[in-house]
Length: 95
Image (tube, rainbow, N blue to C red):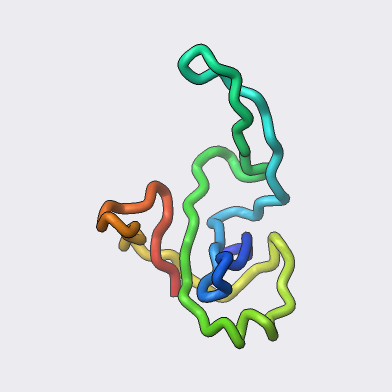
């Protein structure tokens, strides 16, 4: 089982996680001598993998899911590739 995290902006996919995440918080970290806001996931133990599943946007409109809801999906070892054909860090196909 994977846990619902969010719909993509285009509503053509869902992102799930291997552990329930309860939200995100923003903290300030210093990068290169500059303080910048950084979003951190709440929940999990730091060893979280994310799954991506393509869906029909019409289906997204019908799905009534909340962050943390279990979905009958399974994560694979196949990484999702970005526009430059490089693997997206920590994002794998799920089915």
